Amino acid sequence: MARSRIHAEIERLRQAGGSSAAPLANGQANGHAVRPWEVKPSGELVDTGITAADLVGLELPEPKFAIDGLLCEGLTILGGRPKMGKSWLALLLAWAVAGGHDLDGRRSRAGSILYLSLEDTRRRLKSRLEMLQAALGWPVPSTLKIHTAFPRADQGGLYQIVEWLSDQKGNGRLVVIDTLAKFRRPMKGNGNNYADDYEALGEIKSLADRHGFGAMVIHHTRKMPAEDPFDELSGTLAISGAADGLMVLDRKRGADEARLFVTGRDMPDSTIKLKLDRESFRWHFGASSEGIDTSGRHISPAENRIEACKAWIREFLGRFAYPSKEITEAGAKVGFSFHHVRSARAELSVKNDGDLVSTNKLPGHGDEWWCGFGKIENWILRPRPGGPTVRQSDSPLPENRTVGNDFDIPD
Image (cartoon, rainbow, N blue to C red; front, side, top):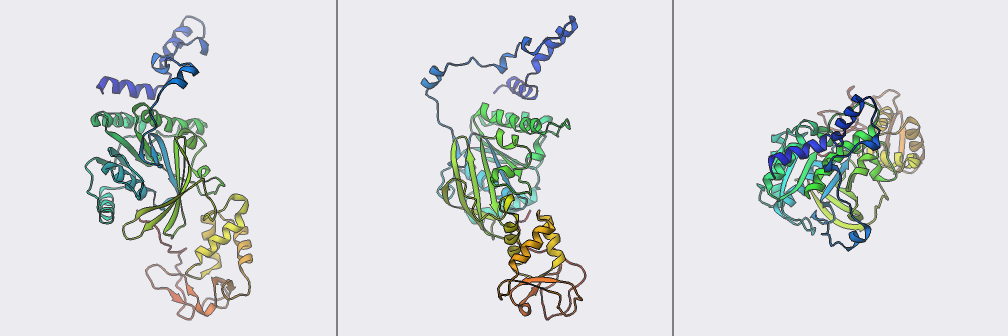
């Protein structure tokens, strides 16, 4: 692609419709305001059109997938909560495509990858690559180019992507942007968040559509749950509306198993089972089922908050007993109110040995209330920073308290 075309491409994306400014200014200078329907559009913004009959008669190529059922040409968003393994998953997908490796039975098509890892350092990425290589046994690809610093979209980032595509001479398969917040232009602050979100993703999608490659953008989900997991993507509905494909990683904190919810314009809805290898942090792809199966999610729909809170308390108190105050504080951090926690604890508290027990009769702890599952004499009290766990019969807990120490995926 000639450099002049690259400049023209970026200017078109930056100033969509900007060519109408001159006629408008001329009209105002002549003493009258030009009405919107009097402005002639730029030739770059108008195609020749086609009749429905001609369109039906056309033979058009099928969409090109980088990985079958997962990554298609166009814009795909991969969302999930922080520290749940999105970046590890994105790196695995990029490596599979760069080397043309099938991924647990899913066919990939080899091509060059541009990976913008904008929240990481080279040291961290080197460690991740070494860990994944030990698990995968794949050669480290030279077709996977990684940047840890890159211009924002409005500061030359789009231009750099088009230049990279030009250098690949048609072999550019995938661009990974981790994360959207680090690449998009800053919000305009005019109150139109929907327009800002759509514009931020529309620029990336325009490039992907125009040049026939896949763009995978990593994005966070919000704390508040939704019945539809794709509604949990942070931002306005423009985030999901602008994309061709959506993937949401759904994992309980501390769990090895997860699910990947997938939907898109060129692929059916599906739910894919994932399993995490804790030694290498390599995701294994399991069976895929049709439809979006949200049963048993770690957070239930908003109308069922007490049941969701009960499930969270069982997870939170799975290994240790905690002071009641800390349970309430931890619940608030994941979106459960004092009422949710109190009601959930009441429903979990019965007289059986395996159920939730609350007591203020722990020697050495004054009248502070503690909660745990099972018999009090078997409780292991929550860990303190840098120290061992403590059985109920051991010495009193120190003053410095923690909210928990659940397994998490490292940065």
